[in-house]
Length: 492
Ligand code: F0G
Image 1 (cartoon, protein in one colour):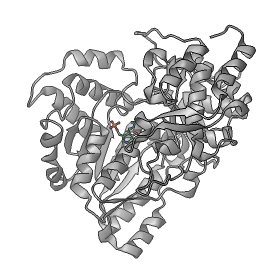
Image 2: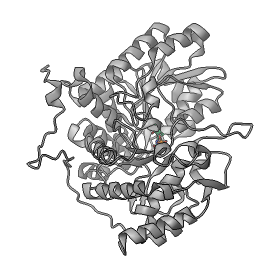
Image 3: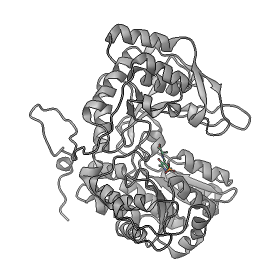
Image 4: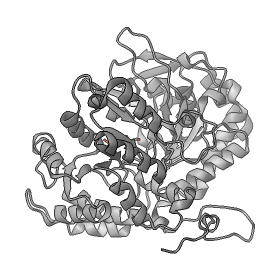
């Protein structure tokens, strides 16, 4: 296999005469949806009605929806075409066979259990492997993963490398797993205390940061030593593949398909949310070992649907099959990370605090530094998400203390980070839309002292960030609107 100079492999394919380094979309838009941008006074009214919770905004009031990439990535013409030839059958559909064969080809694992989305796969895994008192070491948790493990009496242990929890450490692989911590765990509690080990590609909650292939192989070696099952959460695999390709010199000469296979070969189980991986809606679990497959199999018809659809529609399964193949194409998966890199470098270049280096999934604005005058118990990330919506009509997502759960004694754990995630769903936005979002966040940063904190108006006990409502402390939101009008005149 030819090994090109990694420095060459990292160069963009197209250079601009202007010398600028801009992302360039390798696709064109063929179906469009009209957007509306409300005047700022109406945006203020909308966020008040939503209780300063961007989950509760109506989409009709949103200009750019950067809440998530989940289920809202754009589909290609080929995916849409494949949906038309879906084979509708309760059992034995050719559509399922096509999906299964594509997964087998890409991941090299024999068995596949379909599920209606990623968290359903997590439910099946947790029910099969987790018992009270057992631990699940992982690079970092995701909300739904943790909820299923904890529900079954298990304990989540986060063995992320220290740089992973620093928003400023410039390290190419901040999603790496601290293997020494796993050895220490075995020394302290014994190998019998581990249900399975989980690696999350493109670690969602700490800024979409990737792990390296080398790190995964070290985790693999430790798992082999102790006989642990290694599970890969491949929901954000596309971004992680891109970063291994461009940031890991040893992988620069490998194709995306070869990197994918090398990752899967290091694992026993690969599960995913197809709302992210494969640009569709669904999910499932790929399994290498027949005995493990049989242990989990019965839970699919019980909770999801028959073994050849698992809660997914045949149309979605066809789209995912094509989307998985597109994920093997660097031109198809680099658009998200390149746009995110562009947003991050534009914001960073103007002094706006962001998680660096740019990761996958979205750009992450650091609310802790952006509004350092707002204490964590006044929910700075939620306040900033609300302020961004007021200033721009852009809907981001709070990823901070509001997303945490209270402890049983009512005390409130403060999050490691207070981030506002501006997700970049794949192949959806244009560069000018992204530049508009950057412009408004910059304006907000220049006026950051106006932004204040929030307090609960209605605080649900479970998953409060989804549907709880807050209100501003003081009249900062009105002041922000007045300043916007003074600066921008009658602009939207
Ligand atoms: N694992 C990861 C890494 C995820 O990012 C998600 C979902 C899931 C599992 C669960 O998958 O939604 O299909 O049930 N992340 C979404 C997000 C919700 O907005 O980041 P699901």
